[in-house]
Image (cartoon, rainbow, N blue to C red; front, side):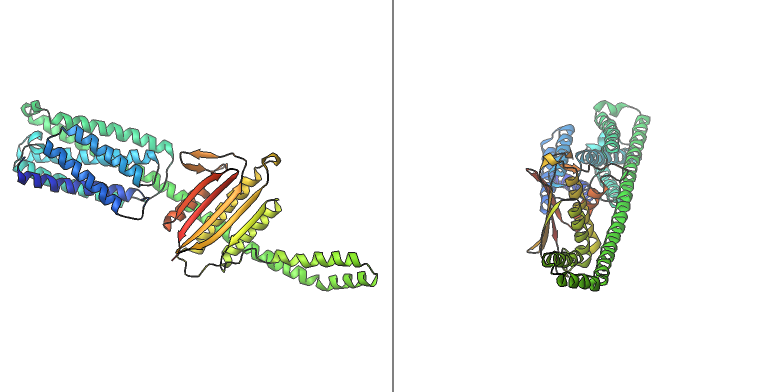
Length: 440
């Protein structure tokens, strides 16, 4: 391979690698707040691709290396389900392959050349085909990447079905790609080239249809999450107003009974009923404590939500320990989003404690809200009976019903929205969720 064609191939590889990685980076949320892993992956792919061209490796070896690198890139650097990553790799590689076949076939038809000339021969036809193919690849991948609505996870069955269809499409394209590089094809009729081009066009449209169906699944999942968000917000507002109403009702009742309590106390003292009078004083002294908010962070809505969950847990014989600091007013988290996270996690903690039997030990919830540096750290731990439902590294809800598990997905989507991190782990009989939000 001459020096000039090494430069041309290098430029083509740079363009294709950038388009593929741009597409995948838009499809998945990164595990790291840095572009260096993406840059490193880009350089590795470019180096491997260029080496395969210079050393003259068979195309299938280059294809296998590229697929492995893309899988490794998604598995190690991106969030999301394994099946989603499999589907995306098949889609992006099959789309690139289909565009290459369509572009090479169209150039071959326009110049009366063969597939092999447009794919291998170092002449003007090959150069024209390269330019046309890379323009198509960049355009298609860019447009499809812009259509995407990011989402963390989807249900397994639809993704598995789409993976199967994408794999079949991929294999068909791979067989055509291998077939067009067979030397005997040069001797076949011009009609054969036309048929192959139209087959490649059909497979490309089939891939785009699969991609569109995939996006529809994502759209429906986002609608469910948005519905859950609205329900959670309405529940939080209702809880807040109920808490405020209960506080004022308790205060009015206490004030209304104040004079009556004094009269009763006076009668006890006149009758020398000292012990009874002291007990009575103790009862009426502790009543106003329920009127006070359990939490004093400076955020009225958060305090009301946590207070209501505190008294709800207390009514179910669940011990609650709270450690919290005052929060500033410069946080970059919306009140309703943060309260939704706290409310969901406390609801799950209370329900886990309720499922415990007497033989499972003490029922308790521990709440910690601290500010460390430029981060807010929320930790909620609860006792549980050891019953958990998992899918890989993810914990699933044990609730039943149409919207079961929506709370956990909603929590994860809010944490992702603010570039936060969440860690869920088991420590003996304690299930702990730790959420970190950058707040400044």
